[in-house]
Picture 1 (cartoon, rainbow, N blue to C red):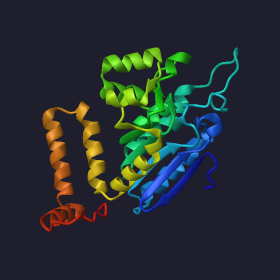
Picture 2 (cartoon, one colour; picture 1 turned 90 degrees about the vertical axis):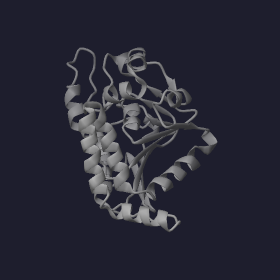
Picture 3 (cartoon, rainbow, N blue to C red; picture 1 turned 90 degrees about the horizontal axis):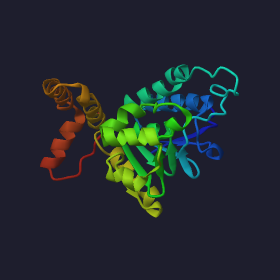
Picture 4 (cartoon, rainbow, N blue to C red; picture 1 turned 135 degrees about the vertical axis):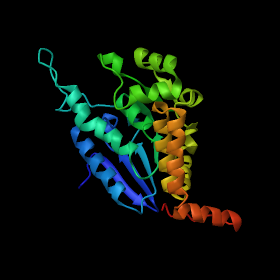
Length: 265
């Protein structure tokens, strides 16, 4: 595929997807969704990829849905399109691809993340933002609810009171406060943002990939599990990982007092 709405590159085990509609604040259209599906499928099938970094071109991360896109555009007096169908065909599969990706995911939020753009960032395993960035649950401003997994992740990250305030009042949340509230991993100085993201990507790419993904799966499952169910899930993952090449390498490196060389297997 000849990518027009995203940039996609892989180097030294790090896959980078850059949303690339800077003149539209990287807002989603149908073509971007198609390109994201293709890129994520390539990552899923490439055993050389060890981590995904997702970011935006220009001054913003992603402004959410492009309301001028043909799939959602309408004029007053017309019947609006079926937004539920758009969610089912585009946003739900996108978030499920990220949730089931075989490598850890890092959102590098370089500016405004609004609406589905904020939810997209929060769907990643780790979120790092520049201090000048912000998050906005803009849905209530146009009579909608947080989608793209926003209504699922917000209460779990920041609690019901803050989640309801963010969703109903649609107030901009600065990156530093997002980090203080536990919504994201870290907010860093703008001048240090690129190097911080590169450092984290390199660190994650060198770690035991399967263990990181199983950690994601265990933590996502926990809210719907009883303690006993979660303990059983942990046992199953530990049984699997305890027979992995990375576990053997990790223990060997510890005993030999050297740095481990994980392969993700």
